[in-house]
Structure formats: C-alpha cells, structure tokens
Length: 251
Image 1 (tube, helix red, strand yellow):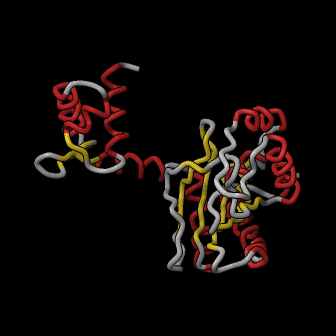
Image 2 (cartoon, rainbow, N blue to C red):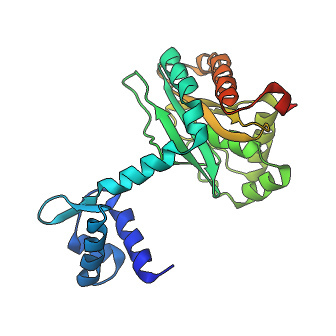
Image 3 (cartoon, rainbow, N blue to C red):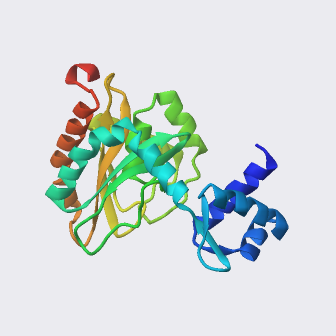
C-alpha cells in the first residue's frame, strides 16, 4: 500500500469517531500538518472529507454514499429485508443481519426495537466471534477443521460472567448450534441483553448470513427469549427462500 493512501485511510478512520482539527489529525497520523492538509484537500475535493467549521474536519457525504451503495449491492441483504422487517414488526425487538467476511462477522442490516431500552449496535459494526449469537451461527456452518483453526486463534476476552473463555468450550457450543439449528447469546456479550440467531441459506444450502433477535432481559426472561425461536426460524426460512434456498438443497 502506498504511504499516501495509508495515511489517508488513517485520517478517515480517525474522523469516523467525530470531527477533528488539523492538529489532532496530524498528531494521530504522526506526520507534519502540511502533509495532513495536502491529504485533506484531496479527500475534500472528492467529498470524502468536509469542513465542519473553520477548524474542524469531518467525514464527507461520498463515504456514506459508497457505504450505502455497497450494502445495497448485497443480494442477501436485499432479499432478506422483507422477512426481517416482518419479524421486527411482529416482535417489536431489535433484529440484525450479519455476515462473515475476511475473518470477521459484520452487521449488514439492523431493524430497531420499538422499546426504550435498545442495543448499541450499528450496520458495519463487528460482532465478537466468541460471544454473539450471529457469530456462533456463521462459524458453526464452517467445516470442522476451519472451525478448529478459528477457535484456536480467538482471544477469548471475557465480556460478562457468562462469556465462553476457552477454545474447547467454544467448539462444544458450535457443535450444539449446528445440531439444533440456532444459537444463543446468553448475556455473554452484554450482561443485560440476550439474543437468539439462525442461519440464512443460499441456493446450495450454504449459510450466507445470520438473522438474530436481541432483547433486554428486563423485557423478556430466558424462557421468553426461547419462545421467540419459532418466529425466528420461520423468518430465517423465509429469508432463505428469498435467497433461492429450498429444503432439497439442505438435504
């Protein structure tokens, strides 16, 4: 990667956290202000960066346009959208769609809860591999040898007292997910939220994405969460059908 491109990407990453001054950006990138100013002018001319006021810069509209065009081009996101929207309207809870890309699980769609207590998540945010239901679904769909390599490479950061913290426990959980057809996040990522997820399959039966329902524990206890599983599985089946999946493809 060229040095200028790398520095420009560092600047964009810094601006993703909010407006920054020229001095702040130069300090973050570790280069002189004249270099940063030259890069900012180029990014500004392409609308990737814009002036927030006389001193501050922020991300520009071109970046959001690229992100939205990229998301809209995902066949699974477009195809699954009606089913996910229906599940969100039926339950009133947060519904996510996530996919596995380049070693990471990323949220590619979200439908907000109608309740006041909401999840801090967003489209484009990465989901932890070892303690989120969507990640468990996507990793459980992998071949056993690939699962084992991935499990061995995870840094099992304990997010709550329920978080899985060893590769052995993680692999056992993945086997259970593959067998029952859905995954649980039993307050493993956030102690006040629990979640269920199921796979969205493609034409050949491959898992394209994972759909989930996330609920604050103050609204539903564990049994109440499990009561959502039939609706979740119906939604996953409907989204899978929209992606070209048939029952014959899975057998």
